[in-house]
Figure 1 (cartoon, rainbow, N blue to C red):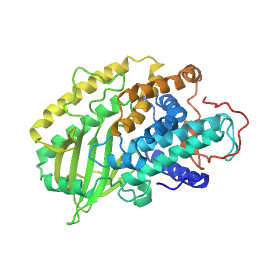
Figure 2 (figure 1 turned 60 degrees about the horizontal axis):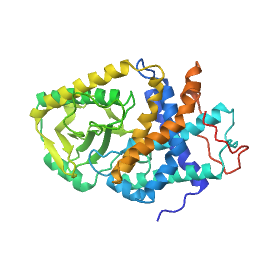
Figure 3 (figure 1 turned 60 degrees about the vertical axis):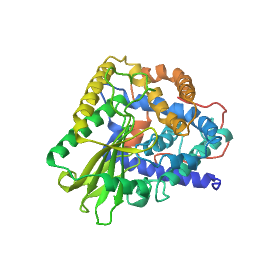
Figure 4 (figure 1 turned 90 degrees about the horizontal axis):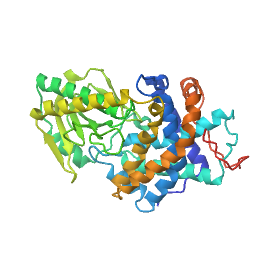
Amino acid sequence: MADALSLEEMNRIIALFGASQKSFMRLEQRSSLRSALFDVPRRSSLGWIGIYQHGASLLRQLTALVAPEEIGRRMKQLCSRPYYLQLSILMCSFLGARQQMILDLGLKPGEPLPGENDARVEDALFLVDFWRRVARTYRNDGCLLPAENGYTQAILPQSIVDELARLIEPCTPDHRRSVRRLAATLDLYSFILHGEQRDGTFGHGPYPQSDGSIIVVHEYNDLLNQFLPWAETATRNLYPNLAIVRRLKADVHARFDLFGSILYTPADVDSFILAESLFTRTGDGTLRQLPWEEIPEIQHRAAEAQNELYLKAAGWTPRYKAEYGVYLFANHLYPFFQIAGLDPSWGETIRRAFEAAVAPLVDPMLQKPDIPSIWPFMATTEGDFFWPVTRRHALSSTVLAH
């Protein structure tokens, strides 16, 4: 049984998470991201509302059946979905929606948020506690964030690392080029499928080897999505997930962030690769090493499917370019129910709840010429990303979700 989370400890964790998110967004200038295809700021702000309004209540139903620690244990496998990104999305969505309300009301840090009654504070405590309990089990070091342990992200059990180390093969320059092309195609497919959100791709490690080399894993874990309304394409990927596993020389430094990305030093690691192979995880959990000869067909299918997705998105209305965030963020919550082995009907339950939460907010948000105030705040604030939660009773019992 996990220790009860106090308000003070929750606010410490919120500040810690916010500092990591600030570092990530400033490093990659994510707060200034704009797109011709997608209304990125508005779709995120809308998607956050679904998790803010319903995430805690839905996850309470989940944890009544499966403990957070068990979910974390099940995530410790190659090509898991959910993976670390989904954990981060739970936190940044709940806290981002809350911070948006605070900014819109002109409040200062520590001032009571109208509507943040005891029930809302309990939602915050529950969600942060769920996050910390899953993350501590999921990560090999018991930490919550990559920044707490040298920006590392080791999640695989040693037995799986040993199996990968035994199977990965030395590769020729031609093989490396084919894997680079495949990775670029899968990156683009995942990026378009998820509406220019970095979902479906996950880098983790490093996993040190006895000779001083390291193993790093690049995953693609949402390649046969059937939940997003636009995901169906005439050309389908061959596998639901793929992992490029590399053994790298000790000279390489890999930095991992809270959204599953990797930064290498030096940036081009090709000349530092000792071995590299492609894997998929089958439905029964076993690893299957894929032959090099399959790469052209895998790449061709991903490229064709990506083109179909692009053409669909190019035809979206201005409203849907923001509204699709409802499904994008529901697609982050649903995998926790899938990995728990619950009935697929939970997907529709989550979808309907998010649609209802967001429906009254879409038109007012679109009618405003400026993007939601959270985005310039995140781009410029020198203070905390997310302000502390207080138990002081609010002035009103109405939750202001605008």
